[in-house]
Amino acid sequence: MQQLDLSSLLTRFKEPETLKMAKMGRELRAKGFDITDLSLGEPDFDTPQHIKIAAIEAIQQNYSHYTPVAGFLDLRQAICEKLHRDNSLHYTPEQIVVGTGAKQCIANLVLALVDAGDEVIIPMPYWVTYSEIVKLAGGIPVLVKTKMENGFKITADELQANISSRTKLFMFSSPCNPTGAVYSEQELKLLAAVFEKQEHVYIMSDEIYEFINYSGKHFSIAQFESIKNRTIVINGLSKGYAMTGWRLGYLAAPMEIAKACDKIQGQFTSATCSITQRAAIAALSGDMQPTKMMIEAFKNRKDLVMDLISQIPGMICSDPPGAFYVFPEVKSFFGKKTVEEELISNADELCMYLLNKAHVSTVTGSAFGEPDCIRISFANNIENIKTGFGKIKSALASLK
Ligand code: PLP
Image (tube, rainbow, N blue to C red; front, side):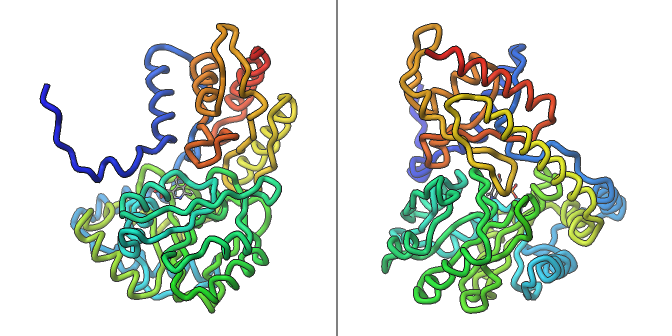
């Protein structure tokens, strides 16, 4: 067969490992295996009723046309009100661009800021997409390894040491996927002090897990006025409102950057779905009780998971202050053999072993730049979590 002549762009980046793992789990399930999915990157809850009703009404009211590229004006106003109410941040609707998920907003931003050869600092472990979007744009990811004893957070010194004259952007998430790390106001203040002196560096603050925080109130680095004119806040509805499939995220940025993102989005998708946009207004201005109940459930599951992990010899794990993942170190299992005499030499092989032999899907830490760890999601019900950890425990105990 003739070799397809695809673009060289495709060789610059990889497909998301998280989606790959979910796909492999689905394939095994389709073959009849009882797979416990602990790889999920989304709440297992249903979208709250009042949001669904707003979408149904929007369909009935014929919200079926193209919308402004950046999103309906009243949605952008609702986002400004949310940012003011929850984060003490002041933006005007012209500074907001709504996209097809936070992922598209991040892509818009990177394409708007990063030129070929520009460096982008990303604390590691990081969400899989950051480095790949930077590479897609022709930029150079500068991955800065963080330490478990520092809660997987970059320090001001580490940040300072990695800034060069080519640094264009710093990308991070708090709460973080995969580690659950949450930066305190004081920690962000120290990072902001570094950025104050580095006027050529922009800051992307991904706050998609804002509400899934067990450690207190969320603080945004954009709250430091001295760097707000170079800071871009990314957020969305996927995690906090259980709306991953609806595809809505947004960014709040200095005016010129928002305009640039609007221009890029205008050629890629025009805008996100009109019905989702109407539902988003209901989500952002409506009752937060369903979100609070979801967080309470995540907190209980996290406590259960930490207890279950403490019963697995060789797994070392810090208690995540945010998001819905644990990120245990598993290197004590490297070098061991399965009952079939297969060697487990790294986290990729350990995850494949857990999937194929224990029928539990997790995600290898190497996907997030940390090859000694694996990511286990607790966005699943208590019964499945107990079953999954039971299977993991016995599969690991049988390694020799
Ligand atoms: N940022 C982080 C840190 C994430 O974990 C995710 C999804 O997993 C996203 C952004 C993308 O979210 P969305 O569904 O809004 O595209």
